[in-house]
Length: 412
Image (cartoon, rainbow, N blue to C red):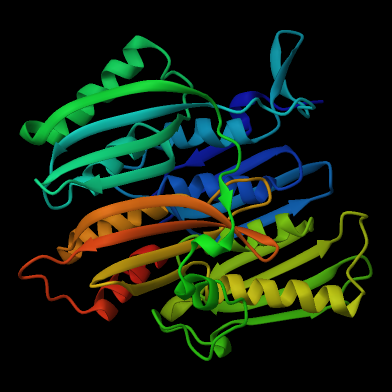
């Protein structure tokens, strides 16, 4: 017996002021489903206040108590969450859900290129339009010419898979033109082809500040751009409370995408959650209890595997991103890096938050690049922003560093 497609995801609005929106997902289970759902929720800027997850390995039931924003598009969020669940098939004229054995084909990549006169906040304004249109930024190359003109190259994919149509292309150009107004000189969108293969590069192409500091997986005494310390995150594992599961208990400070960071780590380790509960406490504290098993359905009894998973969880919760401002000759370069999922997906909205933070700080961007680099045994998405420190620019580097960190962590 199946479940009607419209009942796979149910979003119940708050009944009164102070209540949370309740989001339920009821569908067949699949590897990494929790990670995929939390990633979508993060993309829509919705905050998870509390959560319950349960599955028998075949069917799962998830409940999230969430808080949205005035502009949250709940109906679109529901559509995207349904799309992340196992796809539907038709039986007796009614849509039911079943496992999709065929992986989706890679989306087409388009090149958005435009030239315009520079102004403060321009890059964030463009990024915001692309975000509202559900156009995903895969790669960026931004440069400023000596005469103050900006040449921007955005490699993008379309969540709606309609950018190949004239109507979608014209609408995108129209909305970008409206935000750029009189500074726009030229703009065009062209098809590049199927999704680009991994653009990972050797770490030798990166400054020492990245390879030695940002990508150091050893936990520091304190995170230079935040208030976290290694004592602020507790990860404990216990095999005595359940005959079939390993209990993982986590206590930490809340931040934007916290549940996503936990889920993506477990997904990369091929760990399955049988039952989980997530709650937020006063003063931004969070408690998470997870009953987990390995891919073979057994609890984790190997002490080395326990230590490896525990260490990775602590690292990801203390430093889900790496942020630093370093010298590049006479200039300053902002470096932000986040680990890429084994599935190839990067952390959403990083470039959006970076450009917003710099806009709020009143810091201009001279050039920007997004690339992927293999460091050790992991792939990282690296954002390199050369800051425009013209006359009158006297913002201390540590203030920029801290401002970007706070925006990325949702503390701003």
